[in-house]
Length: 432
Image (cartoon, rainbow, N blue to C red; front, side):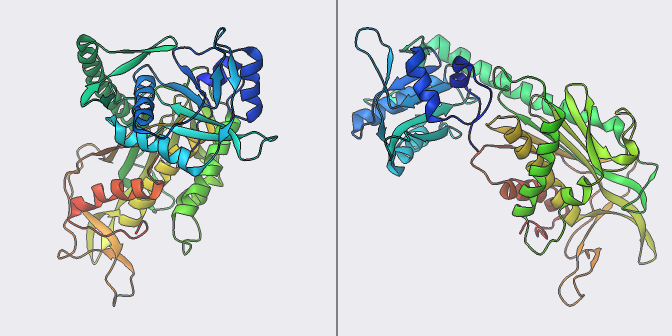
């Protein structure tokens, strides 16, 4: 997913969008200088010294709040004005930059973004725009002469962090991780009062016994200059999420979770977010719901709550069940909705996911896993027997951190297994 908002767009005064070669021409015309978050590189190299220098540049930018390095812009000797110096756009160039970020910077910078902008008048040549995010793993080091060095940018030059700076950065990193974890848990707590356990759910035919609540929050702040979201953005994100989910699932599934849900939904503006739910609850944002509910926050956070458990008579006994396939599709829907929302909002980077099974207060019945029975039983949905899955009384929360290199289906599968494994069951129905 390409970054569509960065320091480069900010200094050019353009709206969030993909860069074009004409934007690079504008840099030269406006004589935009290097600064703390912008660096011009006249050319690429290939030797060991160049690779070390590249790792230094990437680590310095990541340690200074992120920024942009453009390969293919030189500086005039006296004035330091930027001068376009097209370089050859080959696959090896992209591989070299990514390899340096992953293998020569410690810890690695996994989610850099590269854009190759070809000069329309010089086919095969142009510039490479490298966007380095505001890293949550700072401080980053590179190695020179077997010595680990932590660089940072100071205006248009690079200096080394002092020992006290490194110690402070590590303390800030731990504090930031704790704050992000607490904020994602707050997203879950915020939606809990909205969940209805009394009114029969029209799809389940019975009141909801268990909700699956998934909260996803970016680990980096939204890009500078990104304002409040608009309704068309929420609508586009919903449609894109449905496409992403359809692509992630096997072709045998005719209707996705989001596709089944989306036809009767439209966004309603809440406080710094958009709320999506069925037409029956359009009037007010604050009322409770017994149907799936999604919340898309302006800062890129996403919350999805879906009923996945209910109580019914099975084989003459009243039992509470959690639907395995619904667990998988709910998790996948949340991941796809987040990817779509970040695409529409022009944000990239890692995210923290927290997911919980939430039961009505005081509810202590064991929960059985409802899934496809073994071959020979016509693969009908039923409670899995004790030799396949055991009932669960108390569920553990599941959490993980993702980055932009992971596929939505892989993230969802890992998260779904975190729940399904609690039944001592390790098979996926939908995300296999």
